[in-house]
Every structure is written in C-alpha cells, then in structure tokens.
Length: 427
Image (cartoon, rainbow, N blue to C red):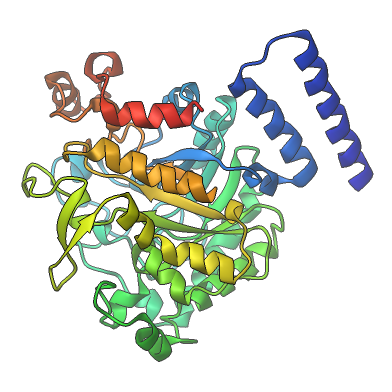
C-alpha cells in the first residue's frame, strides 16, 4: 500500500510538472494541484503542511452556496459549526422561546448522549458533500458536548456539568468516536475540532486572565473533571480507535484564550493541532451600536475586571499572543500545528481594518494557520466584513425580515476591512 501511494504521488507530481510546461497555471490552480499531491502522499494531515488561510461558517442552516463563494476568494478551509441548524428560525432571529430546548444537533440531547441523530447526520453529510463538490476543505467543530450545552442554547447560563463529572467526558468520547467512524473517509473533512471555546475555568471561579493566577487555579483542578487535558486525552484516544488519520484540533481553555496555553499539555500524536481565538481586547472588538463606540484601534483600552488601561497596537497584540509562541517552542510544536482559529472585530470599530491587518501580519510572521470570523454570517452582521464599516443597506434588513438571504450584489460594498482580507487570501 505504501509503495502504491508513493507511485501515485510521483505520477501526480509529474502531471503537475507536465501541465506547468504546457500551459500557464494561476497561483490558485497551483495550490489545488499541490493539495492533491499532499493528500495522496501524507493523508489528511498533509493539508496542513503549509500555512492555510480560512474562515468560519456558523450559520443558522446549511448554506452550500457559501462554499462556492468562499472558493472564489481563495479561502482554503472552512471551520464549520452546525449546532444552530437544530433550532427554529423564530428562536434564532425573532427572540421567541426555544420550542426544543433539549434538542442538540447531532448528539440528540446534551443531557445524555445515546447515539448520533440520523436526520441531523444526513443534513451534515449533504452539506459536506456540497463542500467537496465546490472544492472546499472543512474543519468540523461543535458548540456543545454532552454535559456542556452551548450557553446561548442554555438560557445564557454556563453548562458546567462536564467539568464536574467524568461521566460526561466518556459520553463526549463516544459521541466523537461515532462521528469519526462515519466521517473518517469523507474527502472534504480535514480536521475534527473537538469543542469550540472550552472554559472549565468558569466552573471553579476563574474568570479574568488579566488579574488571576493560572498556575494557582490549575494546581487545584489538575487530574479532576475540570482539567481540560483529561477531557482531551479521553476523546482523542476514543477517536483514534476508529480513525488514526484525520487531524484533531484542540482549543486552549477560557474560551480558547492564548493565555490558557500555559496549562495545555501536548498529546503524543503528530496529527494533533492546537488552536486559539483572538478577540482581544474584547472591550474594543465587541463594541456595537447598542454599547457605543468608546475605543478605537490603535489606542488605549480599559481591560479586565480591574479596568486597567493598556494601549493596544501591533506590538501589544504580539505580546498578547506570546504565550502561544512560547508554549510551541518549549514543546517542540512546529508552526504548521498552530491555528489562529477565530479572530475578528466589529466592522464598525474605528481602525478595524488595521486591527485585522496587524493580527494577520503576526500570524504570517510565525507561520500559523488562520481563519477569520466570519464569512457571510446569516445570524449576525457585525463581522460580515463584505458589508463594509457602516450600517447594512436596507436590502439586508428587508431580506432578513422576510426570512430570505440578502442579494449579495445589492448589499456588499468595497471597504478597507474586506480589502485587507481579500489581499491576504489571494496572495
């Protein structure tokens, strides 16, 4: 089998060389040909051999046409979170009560996992098939696990059961094993991201990395159900009993903050990647019309529970990301196993384009993969960067009110934020 793979890889390489000599290939086509060779010779982990640039889909339903649109701007991978697909339109858009509060996508009910929901899986499979047809690669993630229902589907309260009872670790491991068994051979899937933004810290009173001592907190919870490393160890082992090849992606703690890398323990598996999210300073990036726009970038921001003033610019952002770089160096984790999995800023914040540009420049400097949040979000427009830095045009709200998708040609504008992203994606 190994000899056959080598021969196939050689033939594909010769085909690339032959085509190169016979015609002009644009950079995007060249990358696609390289990807084919990588996937053949190295398995799915070969996709991650070189820096990849992607985005996030966290929409209210499957939107296959967005894969085509993403491919047109050279987005190389999609991080897909399908949890919202289980909820009614009125709950997501019209502030109506959730008529199925115990319905969780794929797992049935986060209170107790009993097996994959077949109807949900069929919907996911159809979406992934569409991704493949459009040439997209997908990292699948979930917002909920057994004993850990997503806060927005849990009356806006943290569901911390998983951090108090090992039974939910085992149920989560069974859930991912069942999912991996079904998806391991799907050609679009190039990663399992086991849980989005885990935060065991909040279950035991740790909330503010600006002022609290991580070492002291972790010393109290190590080896308990509140130890994120224990959860990961259990799930990774379970997945690898049925799928030894698909890369597994692990978020750091406290909502995937770079600071939580301090207690993250690497797993002895060279197909495991490590990821963080970057929305700091949150007090600036999360500003909106309701809250008001008090801060701009670059500039001073009051951060943390102590409201300490700190000036943010490229150098401050790089300093904030230092725990990731330091952790990777200390644990001999190469750059191609680190992902800036989510990052973004409300597009109306003054200087948002520069914030995005500065972050990407740091990611590029270190050679980390990155995926911005978000592409054509259909439940929230604050980080739909193709809308520009002003309020959406009336056509956007009219379509939303009618339960329709806005006509992108009518609502998109040329703008500094999207120009930054498009330039980086098309490099």
